[in-house]
Length: 291
Ligand SMILES: NC(=O)c1ccc[n+]([C@@H]2O[C@H](COP(=O)([O-])OP(=O)(O)OC[C@H]3O[C@@H](n4cnc5c(N)ncnc54)[C@H](O)[C@@H]3O)[C@@H](O)[C@H]2O)c1
Image 1 (cartoon, rainbow, N blue to C red):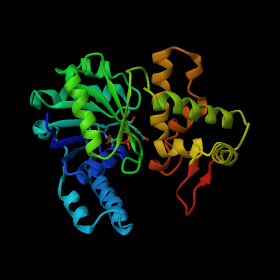
Image 2 (spheres, rainbow, N blue to C red):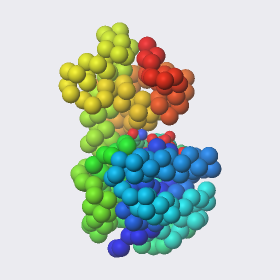
Image 3 (spheres, rainbow, N blue to C red):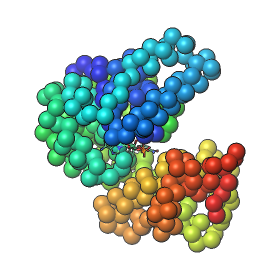
């Protein structure tokens, strides 16, 4: 089917990045959140990020203005009824995502494709709670969305071929590259990445290294552009913990046990960059390790 109008549910760091790339590629975007502050912050963030692209001569001021004019916001799920494609990018909690799909489905046209940007939750299970499991897929963008090339495409057990092909065409229209993953906990990227981050937190917890030495070791020793603790702060420690819990519960293997120190940071509300503090404190001029 031809996709022109896209709804993005959840206007956090992923939702604003997804809205940005779709609007820049000519799609009409409707951004939804339960918080008006989150919607305002997302639009301001998209404006800043597009402005940066203008100042680097990546896009013209006219292209930026056209992209901004394609983005609308709403707090009402009913307003998303006429869109061709829905991308759910709300908080990584299954109960939150299921409630969204349950509330949304009665408003949708039968042909609308439903997707979730979940990092780890079962696509088959999310799809089974909707009226269209054959038109439901995992659509996993990477952070920051305007910069990262990959989109993971995850078929649930019932996803049909036309839905997969439509989303593949959408990924190509964004100038990005798709990798297909089967629907098992955390798919490919986070199945591999998150245990590494969790192990970095254990390395800190057990005193093998400080925040600074762990990140320096991995950056200079393995040529990673960011250290694992810096990356965890960038992703959000609540999201990292949620993914480890999905791996632990879904694969029932103790090797996925979330590090108690990761849990402690989340309990403190130290969720990383988005709250100003995580393994680093971001409230000053430069990030300072918190351990
Ligand atoms: N952070 C990453 O690096 C990353 C990468 C890929 C995928 N993801 C996935 O993207 C999703 C969002 O992550 P994020 O990092 O943007 O989180 P975030 O905390 O920055 O944003 C989540 C947003 O969802 C909103 N929200 C919560 N409940 C809602 C509801 N019922 N309806 C509408 N909006 C609601 C919140 O108000 C918030 O603005 C998660 O599923 C996460 O696993 C995250």
